[in-house]
Length: 178
Image (cartoon, rainbow, N blue to C red; front, side, top):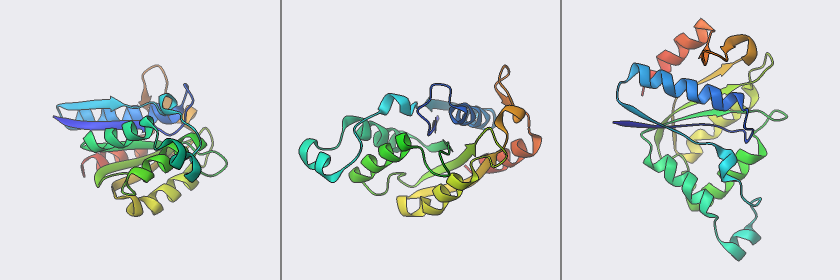
């Protein structure tokens, strides 16, 4: 059985990126039978802001170890990046920074699909480009990166489905590389 870890990088309980990550994981399950989807909510992994002083005083928080372990136990990872002011969310950046203190190879050479979405026309492309560009330094095997612009125009909330056919075709191409 293939284990797929999926999460959005926003700590909002109404995260559209969490919805997109879940959707992509479901599409993986549809394409590759016998998939165990693990949905991670980073809202549940909040911890003190990283600093070397905190690390020396208290060590690496358990939630950072939990995050790192969840990636390690997965066969593939789906991340949908929320964009705050053109960059990573502070919640994700903090979680990532703590996990990188365990091992700089945070992504542990896992096959990965990187996604991003936003309510506007940019589709969070800035943060997606940053994430994809830095991925090799953190041992990510990125199979593809894809942005969905205008989330609320391209996602059916009731059906929990992306309605943009071009996006779906590209996502299926990426899934075939897993």
